[in-house]
Length: 169
Image 1 (cartoon, rainbow, N blue to C red):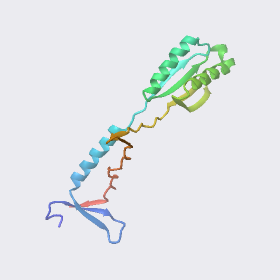
Image 2: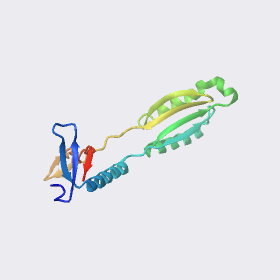
Image 3: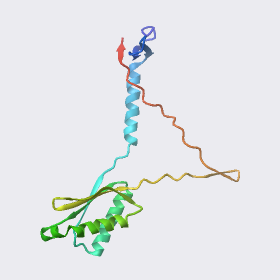
Image 4: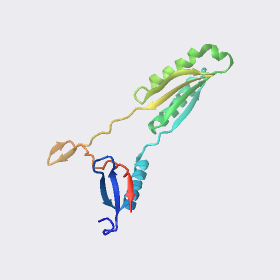
């Protein structure tokens, strides 16, 4: 039957008794699957990790400027690695660096969550911040003077089909 229709006979479920086969254009199937995978990769969000460096004896204005950079990175959807660099005798007062990181965490309360708690790594203290996921705001539509909530989006995309086991020609 497959040869008559100039299509391929594809074994879909070889473990079934009897094995299940399907008549299809296997080349077209592979092409469409590749296109779906390419589209899925396009829609995938890419998250970069930006780094900002502080010193333990940072001035108030410098702190505010660097905090502004962190806010900009987070609002762009990037994770931020905050590093406090200690030099020389500053290593004896790592609590100063911890205070700066705690203050930054407090200042960015609604904008970021701590992904990795502050930890000392050699002469650096590192903390990673991640942007807070914001819920999309549903738009209310007005129809004939009545406000209606939009219906939930139904899943119309097909689940990726399993790879056929064998192709016979």
